Each structure stands twice: as C-alpha cells, then as structure tokens.
Image (cartoon, rainbow, N blue to C red):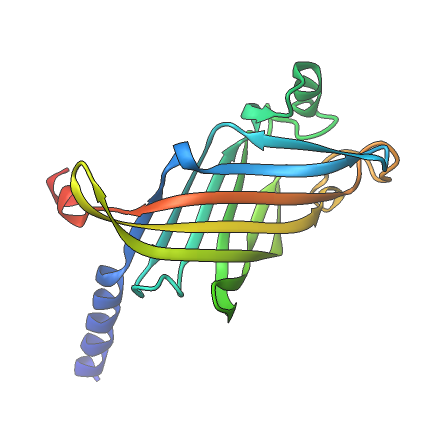
Amino acid sequence: MKAIALSIAALLTVSVASAQTWTVDKAHSKVGFTVTHLMLSEVDGNFKTFDAKLTASKPDLSDAVVELTADVNSINTDNERRDGHLKTPDWFDAAKYPTITFKSTSFQKVEGKKYKMMGNLTMHGVTKPVMLDAVLTGPVTMDSPRGKMEKAGLKVNGTIKRTDFGVGSSGGAVVSEEIEIKAAGEFAKQDAAMDEKK
C-alpha cells in the first residue's frame, strides 16, 4: 500500500515538474470589451493594467490553464468622465472591488486552432462560470536577443451578462446588459534556467 502511495506521489511530482509557465507580453496584448449604447452604437473599452499567464504540460499547449487579472481602476473608454463613472458604486465600484479575475477550468479543442474555454470569472465580488471561444496559434520558436524563444498567441472572445455580476442596473435601455469580452495575448515560455537563478 505504501509503495502504491509513493508511486502516485512520484507521478504527481513529475506532472507538476513538467508543467511550463508562459508569461504574457503586455506590449503585444490587450484585454477589452464592447457594449451597445442606447441600442444604437457600440462603445469599446479596455483595461490598461492587467496580467496573464498560461500553464501547460503538453508541448502544443492543448491542456493550457489560463489565468488573468485586470485592474478595474485602469478602465479606459476614451472618455474620462465616463471612465470615472464606471468606477463608482453605480457600476464596478472599483474602491470595493478593484480587480477582475479569470481562471480556466477546461480547455477543449473544437477543431484546428479553435477551442472552447470554460472558467470562473470574478467581477464585482461575484464569481460565475463562463464559456468563451478561444483561438490558439503556435507555439513557434523565434530568435530573440537572448537566443531562441518559444512564443504562442491566444485570442479569446465571448459574451457575458453584466447584471449577473451585479454591475449596473437591469434593463439595457442605455447600456446593453450583454457585454462582449475581447482579449488577445502573446505569450513567451518562461526560461526555467533563469527561474533557478532567481
């Protein structure tokens, strides 16, 4: 019995050790959204401050776990007055709920580069499961000043209902209840050798 337990522990250790972390290149990534105003026009926005990473053990990243954090206070819709209002308790209540987080729970291939990604989204103090469409490109090996580097791209989109998270009032007469999420990221495989030196 003890031998079986040790074998299982060894397998788990190997699995954890083989997992690779991919860090986001923020200069080539964005986290945005689109809402409909007065049921007439679309307004785009984004979060200027965010962080994201992928963790995967398979070389093709087909078992990726995606994690994202966005700073609500960095919301940007190209209108300072509107941005200020979005941070108030009428909407995101940034003072009380300063971050939006997402962590995937499944990453399933549909065909080719297309995936369905399920995960838990936390916003305005509410956590709910959401399903998103994802397109994974790469990984590819590229030259960099530090030598060869592996990179991958991930594009995500989907629709959520803001009132499910208690953001804003119900009824979409002024701002639609449905919010389109649009995120795109470029990720680089973290150098394990450099990690060991830290």
